[in-house]
Image (spheres, rainbow, N blue to C red):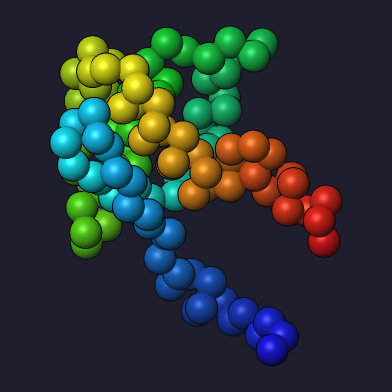
Length: 115
């Protein structure tokens, strides 16, 4: 079965993809959503000369961890608290966010090569 052409309404009403991520370090799981292109662009502007700001993973987690309804779990400013959490949990969650956003292991660029 082939793909169908998308309408403007279908594109603009699309929900962001979410994924459940088990976090054994915290004894449970979280839901993460894909980043928007505006968020990716804003984060990209902050990476200067390949140097990633120290709290980047905490900010990614703060932005994209959501509840079952897709509502943000954390508030602006929570990244300071998240930055003091254990590294393994934040790396696990931020990698899942980058993956669902098509940004991990080549992401979108790798998909283009395969087509």
